[in-house]
Image 1 (cartoon, helix red, strand yellow):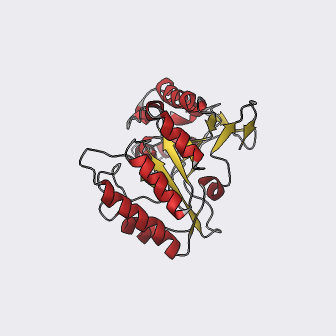
Image 2 (tube, rainbow, N blue to C red; image 1 turned 120 degrees about the horizontal axis):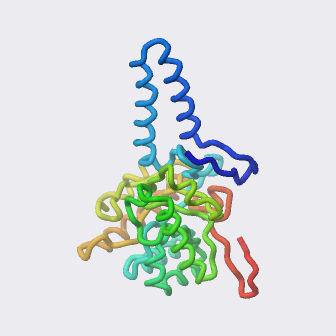
Length: 280
């Protein structure tokens, strides 16, 4: 396993996965002196945890993961994944403008390159943009470190051309893995996942999205949504109505919708000015 330099402390630190792995090995060695069969238990348990951990977006098992903000503010953040989409994204921007709220868009490099005007519109509306890999490979975390790093870097290069440097990376489907930490080394980004979702399958299951989220939303939550159409049969009008009900419902619960940067207490991206200076 890999140890990397901690951004905050400047010292080498072990991830929870590494610490648990070492602990499991030590316990297995001790159990060998009593009954060799017992030594299999801690090792098997460790393997099971490693197999399950990638599928819990808020579990920083392999590397630090930001999945929510503090609950001291009665506020939440809205994030949209997988876009931009020529049909859906402009409608989302109008909806957010109507409610006077800001969101963060975790875009793929491929779609950003295909729809440069939409990226510009997202920025013009005052929203922030995060890195969501280049092609959104759902199995990305099971690829080689080189492939993961390449996906992240390719998306970053596309977004750099728009004068921005994303500081937040969201892996496809929120899945993490042991290879993500070394792949992100020196990227300048942190993993920002989510704490509240409707399990909409990338807008494949949109019925009652607003109710599903409003039932579980809490102060400090990072809500994940999708500004994409999964098929030509996508009911955009119904989905937009659900989004409208969601934002209104959040406010009715006494919660504000704040920019992601305010919820997590750190910038989501850096903007490059014409003079080459960087602003956060």
